[in-house]
Image 1: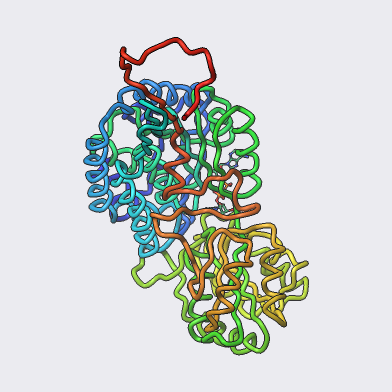
Image 2: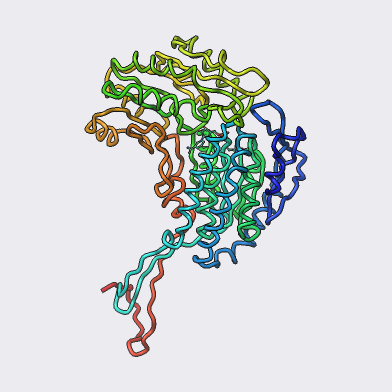
Length: 510
Ligand code: NAD
């Protein structure tokens, strides 16, 4: 068992663990005197205290990464591949430790935590193919005796700033392709559930990754700003809420960095009158309440078209009392608590405002939440929601599903396309022609046809449109390799002394 995993023994000891930075292959305790609490959301107890980095501590991580870069970038592709296979095996064999950590700090149920790791592992597996992914192109005899070829090279030191809702997987979206491409990486994880990043660091070290190639600095805006402004950091990846994503993009690019910043979402699932009602209801419940709605791809708005609305709402209502809400470590729990008390209370406020603003409260999660000090909220369903209501306008990021009733397909499509976000969207229908037209018309980055959570597989890339993405690169998949490398084109001639002469004219290809 690794050091971090040992910290979380069978039952938590009740002690508050200190969560420190990881710089140059070892734990480094913070010196800022600033820190933040980490909770077990299922019990409401504080389990950790995480150090917040100063700009000097961020600089120490950047310097360690810079020192490691020259030799890391020179490691051959076959050695990097070998290492990534070892990383894959270690994350696979420590999957249960990692999943447990996620449940203890994030609150998601164990099966969901294992699912997060499985999807992250797919990204690591994709990176095992790094020799193929970094292949350039070659044009022989572009001009007489001249060959031209393209190569892709790493930036140097790159940083990733990640959200609370996928504390292992979203960092994997970043560090795996960044490191496989030859960069050194600095992770600034969410301060709400930071321990998974340290277990990640330990596993990477155990796999044989050289010190300094992967570093972790914890913290808040101070640490983030230090990364965004540091001249030694060349590219920044961000995943989180839209206001912060916009800030990261504007600040990072102002400081000359390449930035990809994935933001928030308001994902709609449209159900047409010809859809299978039971299948759509199962999908809506799974995608609306899975991980307590704390997924950027969660379905937040169900758009019921025409006369499907009444049977669909009835079918969902019938399923809700069966959703088991409880401590994520309990094997029969299907939905855990929310990440913090403040977040739980904010989510609950949308149940209140929704009914005050005229929605029909079909199920009230405040009444069905388990007792105790955990940050629990049961499942809520609001019907007859309209576009002016707060529950429709805001990203709630909790187990509150809103039903908007639309007369026609065009009205439903208009709702999605007028929405400021454009992350995921789903259409439930049996009509292939309509589905094909929908895929053509809709303004969102990830589209599901009878699939409620269309997270792309690891060999495609993940990203939204509109206010769900700032920058032009999506995460993981081929776009990530492009993001974490720079192109270089080499024009080469091997001198043949017999044909050499002085020529002041502009070089021509013919
Ligand atoms: P958040 O924006 O509050 O935090 C994300 C990161 O930014 C954290 O590391 C945090 O410490 C840092 N941060 C917070 N405030 C900051 C500030 N003022 N200045 C600089 N840095 C700051 O997001 P969250 O609450 O951790 O995560 C939930 C959000 O993430 C939701 O909006 C969700 O939709 C989004 N998300 C999006 C995707 C996607 O792929 N588009 C994936 C997962 C989550």
